[in-house]
Amino acid sequence: MKSHDGLEIHYVYKPVKSSKPVILFLHGLGANYSGWKNTIASAKKRGYSTLAIDLRGHGLSSTPEQYEYYALEHFAKDIKNILTQLEIKKFILVGHSFGGSVAIVYCTKYIDASLQKMILIESTHKYPYKKYHELNVNPFFCFLLRRLVQWNILNNKSFPKIPELDLTNLYKENVFFQIYDEIYHTSFKVIFQCLDAAKKFSNQEDKKIVSSLQNIKFPTLLISGAEDNIVDKRYSYELKKLIPHAKLRVFEKANHQFLLEENSILNKELFSFLAEKN
Image 1 (cartoon, rainbow, N blue to C red):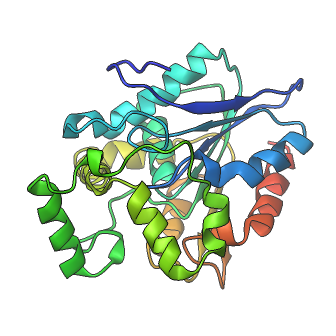
Image 2: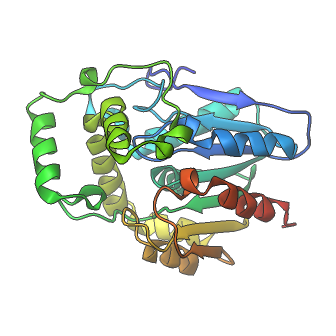
């Protein structure tokens, strides 16, 4: 799909003949739609149509160099335009990590009666990192990477497009190869631009975000991992306080890769929630 600002936004839409809402999946930072493959397969068996988007700067979508393309409002508008183009009347938002934050931005920007339910997995409504502590990794490493991006040594051209990096197999690899795959196939420039844009939106729209969350009328499920060192579980507890009647499930031994490492457990929780009547 061509976006409102001229980018190509890649998505995979798998419709089935059903009156159930379409499940719209939003992946995390540096990932792509393939992380949802197993969940998409489970959804099909249960009679759900699915829509999985490669967020701008990720996967097979365009990766522009300029920072202004990564304002979070653009991510939300991409979702709105795809839903309009596909003439989707009812849908469920499911977002992991950064994808969950984008889902919250969507709720902040649009009052959408077609949105039936929302599931936020290891997500936050506010920017969670201090400077040079992005994603809670070593601050020296963050400082060095930011300088390499600033000096244009690392840009989007350093990370060539590939037919598809299948994230569902990534967690099975040796840790060294996991790191190599993610570094090679993810643009650090895009990651920092997305993080900076998230910080800006969080700071500038804080009151509007909180108000939007407090006025959510549809059922919402929050899922968090007790051992998540990327997005601390306390943000899920904060979201539960803000969103009326939100349900929270914290999995004691889960980390930030819960989507990939414990997909069967996640799917059970997700589809159980979707089966509940509003």
